Length: 294
Image (cartoon, rainbow, N blue to C red; front, side):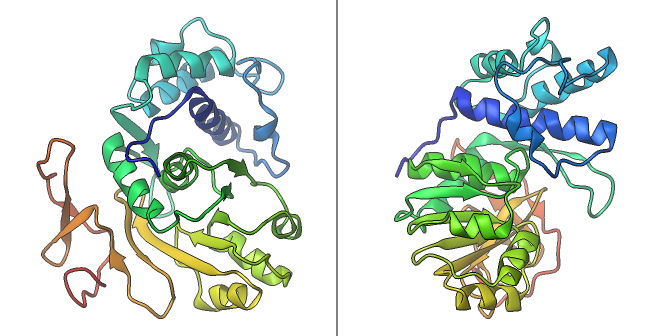
């Protein structure tokens, strides 16, 4: 397992493809149930048939793409393909960008931008990867441009040095039938419920991870009865990233090693220079059992 995580051009392209397509969906108010996003290639033209946009929309996408990697909108001025955008952003921000700016889902209010330093994101990924050193592949069911997707489907595969397979848009039956022993499946409660409802048997040795919201205990128990070897639940938020984890719905959550508790409702992180971050507030009320469990 790696001790530091570097992004490559392919990561930039995958992130940019998801980000640009998500922004177009939001601007045009349509959904992507057939996986049109995954049909985009480095040669896909910004302004072409699939990505037909106005000059105003082009400027918006350029700003969002640049800001995601801590850069300016003019980073992609004059470039007309997704691949060229990804190459330019990669060459400017490098394999370890200083910051990544995510957008919240808006589930608890208006969407807002959240900027996290890349070092902290990699610390979360490396901590989680220590639990997963026997995994042979990572299957992703979440988009990579949100904070959980970034940690789980971009950084963790890099930390483990294993292949990543984007399995979004697949029906549950095809998804389960395509799994093999040693797979780590990065999902979220809704897709896990669909897998439980499918009633199919998982191959031996498959582990799941769930985030973005509470996963009902009955869903996790059903999945284990169907052969899922383990399910790791991640608790956190877009504002804070991963905060706690547990391996059973009946267990308390354990605070990530990347956080230090300060009182009942604040915590700090260790920074790359060895200092501590300013105190951050928890988004929820936590019932502490001790300094590490809640």
